[in-house]
Image (spheres, rainbow, N blue to C red):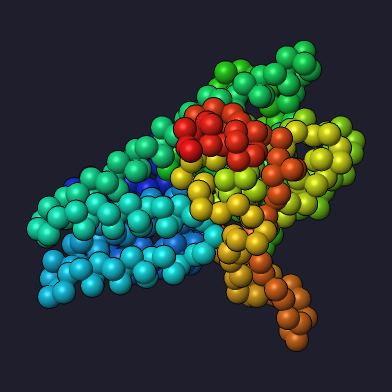
Length: 367
Ligand code: MRU
């Protein structure tokens, strides 16, 4: 997508050196557009853990490149297999909820251990990381192609009047490689001339909505308004939301979805107000092994400091300020689970399906 009219992706290879991977350090957005080069497994693990990159699909792709770095580093180690396994574990330990991380690391481990020759391993791991990156772009484009139909339907019902879409967190191109999941239908609808407006939940504590989604949409010229996390229910009661579209970090085969904390409350409010609640996802976020999201999806708990303070721009400098009494404690759950019964439908790269086991398996030809 575009920044200042110029095309960017969230992760890309260095033009001159294939063993360097560039990312946008998202901690500084929207105030500063800072590029960083990753070159080691430790770099990739740190970038994921400290959320320089974030969002389920991008976490997976960064880990895939991390595994490529592992093959480069293992070449110098006497026990290459152990080195690669340890690197995989290091990456897997970074963030627990997004299943794309395991998905990408497992794919790389299978590919790498197919052969013994170190140079072939490097080549294969590099090719697979590049392939997964390119596939993510295509998958997200397709999610938009299917999702736009839902927006078009509402637009027709409203005789072309503005379609108001509510989204939570950042399931945009910054969370993927390009397009985004929840935002892909929005970008494609806007580009087609459909009149849309997006309500952007600020998404405390790290404000991915206010900082990242608002910035992305603004760079693409999509009308949007940032709201506090608690405002969505009020807007829905007053007919100001036509649909919700959010992303997911892990989806059970029964259609439960784990997404940024607060998503569940939006789904409850949507149900109570007959507002359709859609979840957009690449199939890489489906965890085919689990059925009960509330019981089986690990929920990340992050540092309490993120809740007790806030980061923003003050007199041209990015600063952190304290919000709460010095002696107060906080709990910082990163995600929550929205049960399938609150999800109107899933928007995937294969099409749209109901959030239940039969429909998901049918769509993906699984027994
Ligand atoms: O903690 P984050 O910023 O990694 O959380 C991201 C989200 O919750 C996104 O909505 C989710 O990963 C879907 S991204 C297409």
